Length: 269
Length: 363
Image (tube, rainbow over all chains, first blue to last red; front, side, top):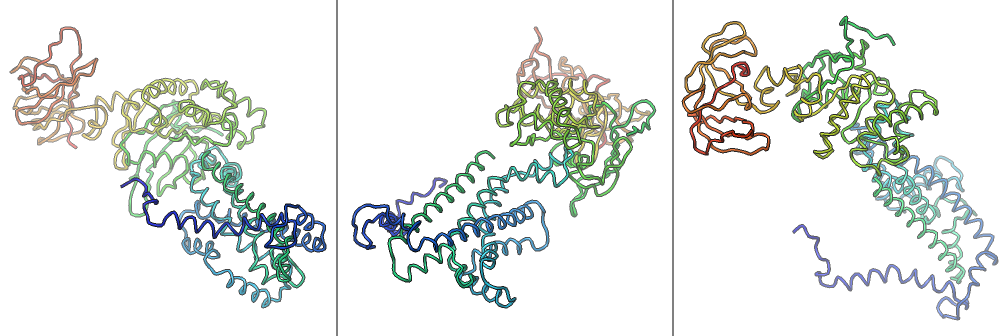
């Protein structure tokens, strides 16, 4: 009974798997393929071309996309840095502070943003900023992103922390390190793969976010997802497919890196 | 720092004074007291859960004592954090920093104590040479064998020159062959450095072969403190007699007492004169006799009569399992010398107890 259940014995397993994969990935593949379409139709293939990629960088919409990309990457970098710092502090407290009052509640609060419907967070954030009289703009996007990125950064960091025995910090303190030195010289380097993995995940989550960003962004401020959405409203052109494909590549690279770093950390122990 | 020398001749490195440790309602240490002298190899020996590791962690500072004092050369350190105590620990799992090479591991404590990088490097290389790892300074811990890691852990703890070195079952992760070699080496290093070692183990053989003195612990209490010879040959109670080495505990009736001597009736009714571990009164008692201190004689002679049940061949010795008339088990060890006659299973034998080696215990 200890043997893993052979999933292939379930009726329709293969069909269900194929269906799921097709529904999930066929649209992505089609978008990627049609981004190389020479014709300006989004449904008819007119030969292979890089012209829409050139268009993204030099075409009439290029300045808009460039500004949106700068905003997106700046916000993603800043939000990922700060949320990773918060998540690291939270993970250390959760695994090293022993039992404290409200520990379970704290853990629930850290992870709550994962469970709350994003639209609710989006509306609540907007109402909050309006109530306190905060002018919406880049800053509001930044703050909102820091908040919802924390649980995503927290997950790989806390997973890594589970694997780091507190005996190393004890050994450090036994060797005359202050608690801060034990943290900085021993725990932090050992947690580094988790922290980096958390940072990359937070970065990509921030880069991709549309819903919350769309609510809390000020007039005229765009990030890549909102800029793409804005363009699509005036009809889908292949340049949108090109920019989507580029964004997809960035995501794939970051998620893969995050995964590889996390795994390398696990095996090195 | 002036070393307080309260004992006149030999300095007291660690003075454990009535240390109590409670976890909630559970008491792990019930007022433990003893002194460890400078340059002494002192062992805390006991079964798992006896409190020996807890006590070591109290001395290192990883556990807060619930009561009592721990004085390091006269200064009470019981309430100081670990990094303010001049004691270092060799951990059971070594706890070498995996992201640093061997040299950086050994230098770690020196740098924290304010040594310059140059002096620390020189000192670390010197200690690595002491543990015969001079050529491994640039390796990562993961690239070393278990025995080498263990020596790095020792070098790392010795480098800052602690007033006392704490060792938490440092040999238990090594295989048997290596363990025996490391025992000798560890003892040598201890003699060379002349630092007091507090060594925690559950292995009585380790304790006997390495220690200057042993504190035998059980249930959060020190049962006996003495040299290996004292705790082996003159155990104060049944726990110590049974835990250190093998022993036979015979139920006897105490007939008369004269100071520390007593006369008892053995199973089978013969009288026997022996030394008592503590002041005793007439009544029931237990006579502890080591298996190698019983001589095999012809049936009907000696102090006891028994029937051979089994023998176990141990190479240098042969262990004889026998039963007395009242079914009490007795183990006898006889040397496997040329011409020693091994009685057959079922044979009736006489057993003569070595008079000076039997000890009367009451608890």
